[in-house]
Length: 88
Image (cartoon, rainbow, N blue to C red; front, side):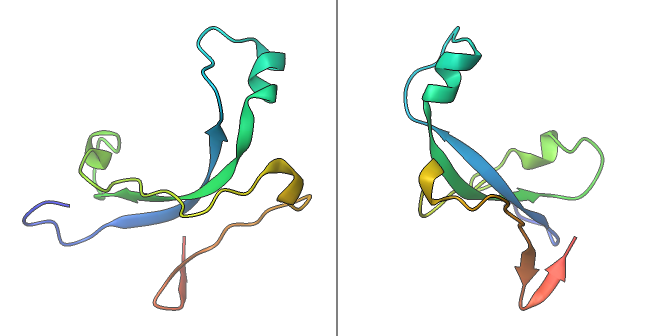
């Protein structure tokens, strides 16, 4: 992410994809705007002030695919692996 950064914290996240503008929308309208989910790689430079350490180009890559609500299983379990090893 930046010169001198030697470590990154990595976690898998499920990101909601909103299919239409929702400014000021209530819960019912927001639910209808749900377009699906995609994967997000949550990258951060370890250290104090986590939000500050997530602000760099490429800090939250998404995708590449979107699964619609009808394609989702009843439960989803995400696991982050780096070089075949599960990371917390």
